[in-house]
Image (tube, rainbow, N blue to C red; front, side):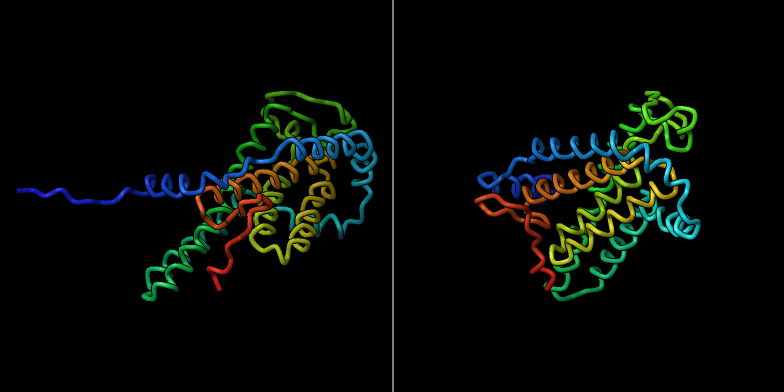
Length: 253
C-alpha cells in the first residue's frame, strides 16, 4: 500500500510564499524621474559632446588608447558571466563540504548575491542588444561618411550598432549591482564604472551619448532587479517607509 509523501511546496511555491508575506511593503519600481534624468543626459551628450569628442578621440595619445583597449573588454557579457558562474559554482561546491548550518547558510546567501548580479547583467544585455539592433546608429568609425545623425534600423552591420553601448550597459549593471550590495564602496564602484564606460569613447567605437545611455540603462535595470529580489526577501530588504533596497550583509558576517 503506497503512502503519499509530503514533498513540501517546491521551489516556486517557496518563492510564492515569500512574495505573499511581503506584499504590504512591496515598492513600485521608480522609473519616471530616472527616465527623465537619463533622457536629458543622453540628449545633452548627443547634441553637445558627440561631435567634438567623437573627433577628438582620434587625436588621443596612443598609450592611452592602448590602455583603454586592454581594459575595455571587462564589459563583455561573456567575461562577466564567466566570472560570476565560476564564483557561483565555487560557492556551491564549498557549501556541500560545510557541515555547520550557519556556514552553509552564508554560502547560500553568497550564491543569491552572485545570482542577483548575474541576472542584472543578463537582463541588461538582452535589452541593450535589442535596442542596438532596432535603432541602428552609425558608429564613430564611419563618422566621416555618415556623421552623428545616421541611423539604419534593424541593420545587422556592426558599424550600425552604436546606440546604446552594450559594453557600457553591462558595466552599468555590474557596478550598480556592486554599489547596492556594498554601499560603503559605492563611490568607488561608480568611478570605476564611469572610467570603463569612457574607454568605449577613447578607442573610438562609441559616442558619449551611446555610453551615457548604456550606463544609465544598466544601472536602472540593476536597481529594478534589486527591488524584485527584495519582494521575495532575497539579498535585499526594504523598510516599510520605503527607501533604497538595503543589502542584508549581516548574514555574511
